[in-house]
Image 1: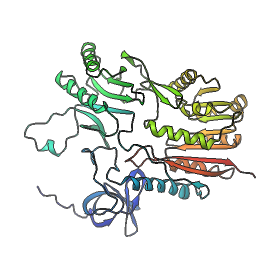
Image 2: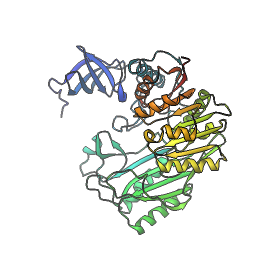
Image 3: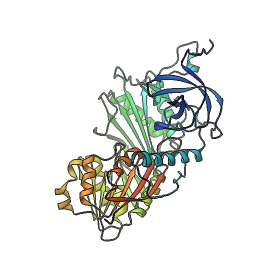
Length: 470
């Protein structure tokens, strides 16, 4: 069957000009903005319009006419279907350039910030196999590709892999992934093969039935390996047999655990993990610090680049031996403990209670007696009473989630007026918004983008603020 051109929906000979939010390309046709999936800046393409609004439209590449000089061949066979690594077809140096532009645009357009010393983006030392954690999903209704459609017989529908974008109930059955080093691929492939051989049921996301639900794999720089199998139905004999076989197939697994998740969502941070074999945690090492990482712990997924990021925060913070430091959104206290080696005292605040417990244990393990960690909603915890009890900080570190800081948190910071603020962000847009609320009191001195996730549009950015001498 020929690929017919949809009427009135294809725009021909469109030049893709730039990158917008979520890594989509930008094009302009008769003063209207089009956000285009599947291209790279510089491509000349025909586009298929999928949503046509009054002020903008959403489209995807329909036919390539002239490839951009920055375009390269994607190295993964799942590219274009899998939702990750969308910039594999874009030269890495161009990726870095666009990420820097993303930060500058946010600062200038959203924050109206034109001061500060800009530093070149820090490239990732690894552009493949850089993640230390991946989570896969089981499904008995996997995504079917063109090769499946060509089969005479009904294809096998079991899959173990990643969610298809915008399709919560469809899973791409991953054959090979370039995000995490081995034995990640080997364990995933073995797990699926074992489950099918022994007729173990794969999860159905709509019906919420089936035994096998998720598979999480953690690797560490020190060579330790954690595997967490999440099940939705408890069949003890089948589970024991599978885990025993897995441990025999992969003797390098140092922590093999399970979680029973019978909720209607995949979140499991509030659920109890059971150790089948090995330890309940794995150990990560950064410089002379050690960090216990459990099955539900947060830890930066690009550990090599996280070390670079923390060293940068340490440098910009300019910690002196008597400084009191506040570390907001401290997580498991990794940045806090980095700075505690130089500071007089470090106070960390984090919403997730389990993360705070990890931070306390890690600090004790590292012999740090000058840290104190609190759990609670940042906007409620960080108030005048808290500052009275814990002191006014000389230096404040903040590393909020993508949504940025609550206005009440910004207001509390302005009342405290620490001498220096280091703002770490995974979302330059909300970072710029927050900084705009602070520029009357603080001067933006240094801006340093960092690439934590190659082949994606995501960029980390670090900004140093200093109190103005008004």
